[in-house]
Length: 116
Length: 116
Image (cartoon, rainbow over all chains, first blue to last red; front, side, top):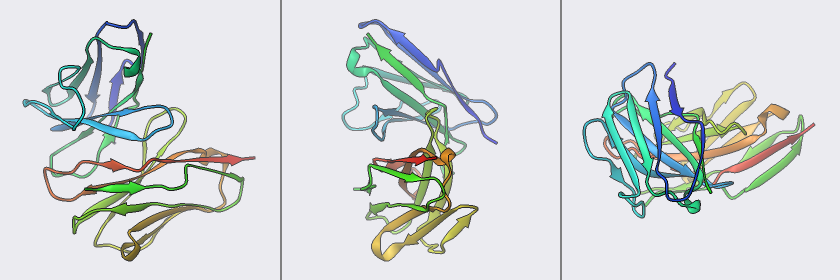
C-alpha cells in the first residue's frame, strides 16, 4: 500500500514562532500533495495544492505568506506556519497522489498544532 | 461550485442497530467521483469507497453498503449490525474527474457513536 507520513505528529509552540511540518510519501513518488486544515469538530478544508518543483496553489482565503509550502522532491512537501498565533492551532493533514490524473489520495496521519 | 452536505451532525445508536449516514451533493460537473472516509479518534483518514458518477450500482462490502442515486444527488452509507469499533466521524466527499482539477470537497462530517 501507499504510505504517507507526517512529522511531527503534534507540536506545541509559543505565539510568534514558526513551525515546519513535513509530509513524506514513503513508498511512492507523489507528483501532487495537498494540505488540509481541520478545526475541532469541523470538516477538512483544503489549504493548498502542491506540485513537485513548482509553486503551490493556495485556496481562496489562505495566506500564502503565512503558510509557506515547499514541494522540493517527489517524496517530500513541507508546510511552514510562520509567526504562528493561537488561532492557527489546528489539525493539519497532508495527502499525496501518485500522478496528477490518478484519483486516489493517500492521507497522512495529521499533525496537531497548538500555539500558546 | 461544488458542495457536499451531511445534514446529520451526530448520530448515536446502540450496538447491532443498523444506521444510515446521509450525503447530498451539488456539482455542475457531468463526471465526478464520490467518496466516503472514516476518521477514527486517532485522526487519520481511512478510505472506504469511491464511486464514479456514471456507475450507479449500489455496493456492499461486508457490513457496509452504499446507495448512490444520481436523480437525487445522494450517496448514502449504511452500516448494518453496527459495532462499537464503527464509532468515528464519517466524511462524504466529492471531486471532479477532470484532470488537473481534482480537488476533494468534504462534507461537514457525521459523528457516529455506537454504544455497547
